[in-house]
Length: 177
Length: 164
Image (tube, rainbow over all chains, first blue to last red; front, side, top):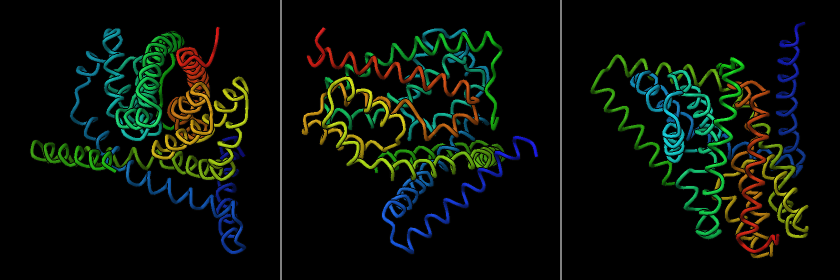
């Protein structure tokens, strides 16, 4: 058995054990297990609502947006402008990191710079507009403004460095590696 | 709720425009969407299992309990830990932060919690790994943790909670 097959079997066994545990918890009324099932249901529904439209947009993007356009605006020659574009694009992203990864991969395939990709990913975690409005209403505008004005420059600088380092090492993003 | 409406509205308009422009290309786009979705689905399944287990082991009451009674340094460390391993939608996370504030938890600790919650992803790791490989995924999460700590520090200083 190769390592890959082994990992796959362990994973499959894990899924089966997980499913049995949930069923057992319901039969015996085991509270933590029931909580797990409710969490699973909640997040599965959330994914079921967000992922299909997100992937349709990714599909449309792949078909319609020209490689030259992405290279021009987000490519290695785009400089700081590309990073700011990445932050703005991230602001409109729905969901968070788990949506940002597939989008980032499509951007990368269309010729976006690695550094810009990392900026986009981090920014889609911290700069989403609806989330920030929500944050400000609970923690105050001052909190949100400080948070954004500290994190965005740090994100851009660290993404540029990480992108440069990985590009030099000949790193490539692959789907399903 | 309205972010869903916004998302679906954008998708329907985009699909409509695309369909009017080129029927064949639009079918092609849907095919790509489907293929990509199916390909990454196992990683999403792993994420769902992880998040359901972790949120059951670390309920909000536990987070509130620990963050409510620790000092600044352990508070920030614990908050970063909880933020990194959990995943919460904003409408659960921010009301929780509001409760924490009322309990006397500092803005510094809350900043560490919310920023790691957003940027550092233990449960999204299976998905990140599929695209970026585990080394880069670890590197990106590590950098994000450092950024989150810097944000917490600055919030602490500017809110007068951390005295230099």
